[in-house]
Amino acid sequence: GLTASLTRVERRRTALRACLYATVILVVAVVAGQFILDAIGIHLHSLKGAGGIIRFLFGWQMLFGRLDAEVKAGVPEAGRDLAVFPLAVPSIAGPGAMMAVILLTDNDVYTVAEQAQTGVVLLVVLLLTYILLLFSDAILRIIGQQGAAILVRVMGIILCSLAVEIVLTALGVASWAPVSR
Image 1 (cartoon, helix red, strand yellow):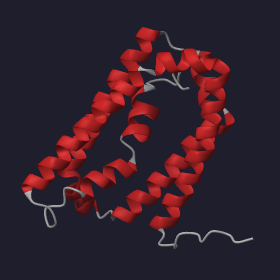
Image 2 (image 1 turned 90 degrees about the vertical axis):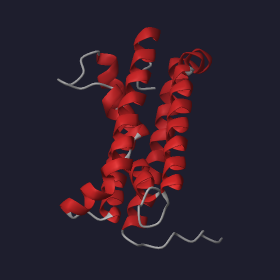
Image 3 (image 1 turned 135 degrees about the vertical axis):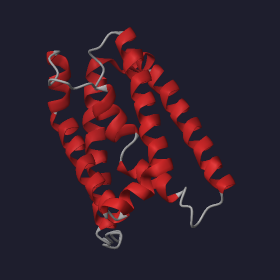
Image 4 (image 1 turned 180 degrees about the vertical axis):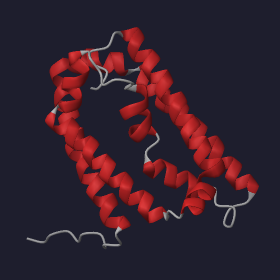
């Protein structure tokens, strides 16, 4: 939905750059994430809470069309690149992904071999993400511009809900029990 107004070549280039940026970000998180967080005194729950708030704001913009309007206007904010924000961060390499790779490569918990396996899985997932982004042309042809607009709004609602859940989890609030009728 965010790249719907771009040409096919621009979408492919944006997808490649977004995945490359996300790869760099997540590899740095694997290699130095825990050290960086410890050095500046940030707990993983704080990262998770901030990530939830950012994700909520991103979902809010999707829901009310602000991102669509900016992309369609063709005049992005100075220095803004869709490949960086919102595609690479927070969509692909969001706080949740960063936290996951930091946790799954903790030196105190996992062996070097297990950490290497996590790295390989990370690269495979990023490659699959890139391949799926390449199919956005076909998906856009099938669902059309209106379908893309609807899909963006529905995903905005889901993203806002996910963000609230992430923030509640970071705050230590127990999962909401299903409401019985």
